[in-house]
Image 1 (tube, helix red, strand yellow):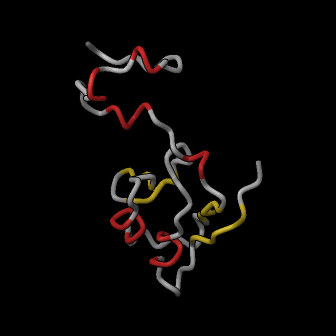
Image 2 (image 1 turned 90 degrees about the vertical axis):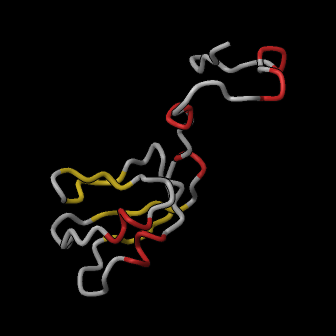
Length: 100
């Protein structure tokens, strides 16, 4: 049985034992709406050291051709690790309160 994520599931539709029988299901669960703080990235200040990319627990830092291109807010939980690890000389990431 393959799980469909296009609509909320009832408990009766869940597979027995809540087994996940397909891969990459985490892509269906956008967790960014949980956060209370949001990282703001300043492209002008960024030195593309990619420390933020290496340490982000949610792989929310987007990179292309070896350079940071932004933050995927669909998956960023606002933990702030990227802002802490950003080199002080660059300070390219600041945490701000999430506004909804």
